[in-house]
Figure 1 (cartoon, helix red, strand yellow):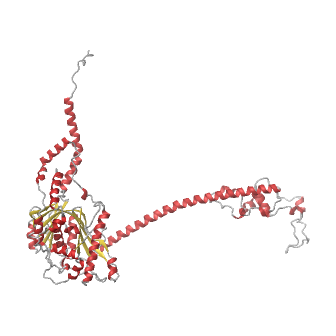
Figure 2 (cartoon, helix red, strand yellow; figure 1 turned 90 degrees about the horizontal axis):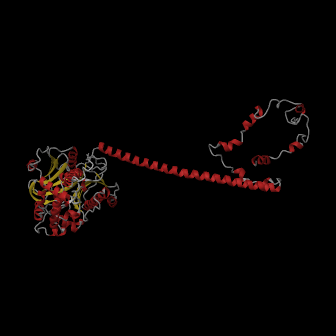
Length: 297
Length: 320
């Protein structure tokens, strides 16, 4: 709280116009305020000294009787309306005196410290001090809470930045990959598609960009799951399937899948070299090639 | 106006108290009382005081302070009075004084109660608190206007100290610079210092009353002295902190009188403006606008009467 009382001043009438000033003074004279002007300022130094002599304690009064300490330096308050600086000045004055008093006590070997086990009535009751403590706790809690809120706000701001950075990074890496891929493809086309698989940029296999959460259209759209594929093949998806699963003359005559050498299967012809692994099968490219063909599209 | 009056008065006062050091030097030479002694011992340094604090002398401080209020005291001021009673174990209380005009009665009451000094809380208009400090019955006495009051019940003053432990009174060095401040210091110290041998006194030191002069007023604070529990003497003093206990108040001296609650005026504060004056000034300030409006209206009327339009020659040219 600011101390408004200290700065209340008599209002200045000089700013008013002359005629209104005259009016004002006439008014004052009427109310008897002007009479006070004739009152003399009083500063009776001799009287004050006399009064002091009358009541002043004898010089021989020992310090312990009054315990009065006058500081050597006057207390300076820079701005009387600034609570903090004013209270600090008073505090420092009291602290200096308290230190000096303690020094005097220790020098004269007067015990002044209250033992820890000395319990006696205090000026403020325990109930009141409980309230004081409660208030302090509440204040502390409020400070902590506001601090936490502030931290959270900052973390959020930081998180946003990080997120933006990550997205940017991801975009960049994707672009890089694409560039590399087109470069590689061009090279392959130049060499006529027979180039070795080894010069395929392998890092693309390893660090493919992770799917962003909630972005299904890009990553999930192309590839159906294994289960879906199996179901599609079983129950049909796309095109007529009605007679596709029926045996035909050719299929019933085909014994390609029959592998008599398999253990636990009886009645097969053991045939070394496996006729099945003939020309048609060998035409199927290797896995990497197949994947590459799929991905390169 | 009040301001002009104050200006004049201040000029006289500064003439009288223009050179504070000069004033202290031209004190009567025969004076051998405490304020002089205090000044001397301050010059000699605290170490001299330290060696002599337990010497035997015949003088004993046997002050008793009568604390009472006039009728019409409000709750806040009553609480302040209660706080003073708590921190001054050597007080005696009395029922509220019925009259505000005849304060001389307090001298008699104090005599009946065997008190050597009195603190009177005089409340005017249920708003303004004036506090009298007086040595009874012969004086001197002083009348303060009390502002910026904080009682001990306030939760933000978180200190506490023993009921009845003797305080150390801390005075600002400014108190020794001017005669009226010396008198005030003597009055304050005699009233607020607790006698050593009083039966309610507890033996330990745990609080400081501080009196400071700032803005021509006296500011009172009460601090608890907190020492860390370390046993080593040196470290104790370094780690000493203060916690404010309350009450707080700001005393603006109005006048110092030669007698108890009256007598010749020894000092009249030129800086003092009564709260009535302040309030009326505020009201006048607030009423200024209306007055201005009324004045303008009147002037306009006069002007219009003076310069009203004469009937012209051709006014009836187009009639009929």
